[in-house]
Length: 166
Image 1 (spheres, rainbow, N blue to C red):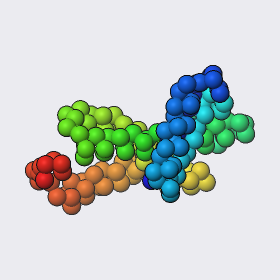
Image 2: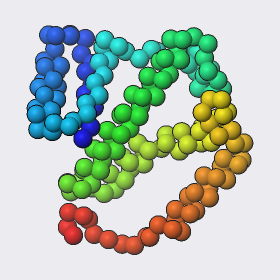
Image 3: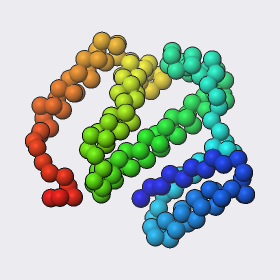
Image 4: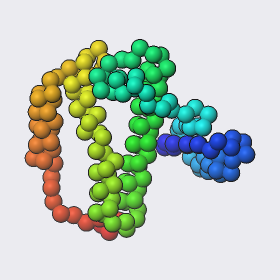
């Protein structure tokens, strides 16, 4: 089991929210001995503000020259992945264990996963020396279209019932 613990209060040791979140994490550790907890203190180690170097690296997919910007981009990717996973877990839990509107959950999942398509697209057309596949944009678009078409054709589409009512 994984847990994402985020603190952001500037009050440090005097923060009530920090004490409360620490107690919640301690309780979860007692209840689940194998718990993997990731801790982020956004007050002590805040992500850098966007700079021209960040934007240039994002737009050109080139590795920035400044070590601080490179480290910040890597940290930012890790934070985004953690928040993305936590968001999906919350939505999945709401789907399986509550009667929250399925339309609302669909739109929440759609909004949450929208950047995923851009990330896959970036991976397909990013240069190989930066961890991508170096496909041209038209070929990357064709690959994504084929994957979508395959998913539509191969994954069964049928009406069903909610898992909690089955």
